[in-house]
Image (cartoon, rainbow, N blue to C red):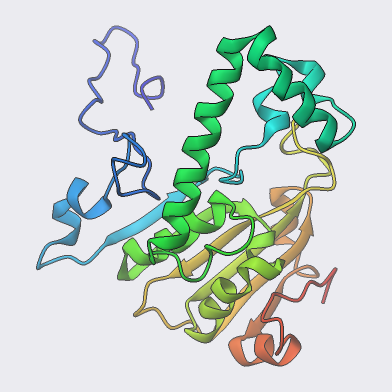
Length: 261
């Protein structure tokens, strides 16, 4: 944002009052010193006259709350990161206590922080629909967005397509369908690739939904898009009513996937 605001011949804009940094899925500063409560941080958006944000647009983190050892040691200890099995990795980590105590301590602290945050999210009661199984941050942030958007507001998120198709997020997607809040889901396959660092088979989506007062009788879908232009292809565009979605997957409550009409 700071770079985008830059103009030739002008003093750089002061944006410190416009950007807030914090961990909004944690509200307890004993768990995370960067814990952030949206209502306290933005009281003007949750006053008697307002009850949430009019519009939320985001690309939340796509990572699990549980510490991922391979990623943690990817640069600091590649041998540990590339271990052939979890058992071998644990043995190598144990040896760090003598060979590299500083790195071992950083690992212990990171693991404890992750476990504390995971426990907080599970027990806080704030995320009854997504704090399930091996919790992924994108799902928790999606549920958080639903809580802080105004009743007549709109939410647009860029998240993995698993938000609509995975077993662990079925209750969240099912709630969007049952409440008729779902507006559209545009699913992409990373063939192009749009994200070079992701595997080309990875699927992500643009998820659009409304606040509690928004009742959309129909939702728009596109699946297996490879670029933005594919969203304009009428042969790919599918419109389904909430009753259609419940009929197609009554037990799992996940989103059905179609190649074309």
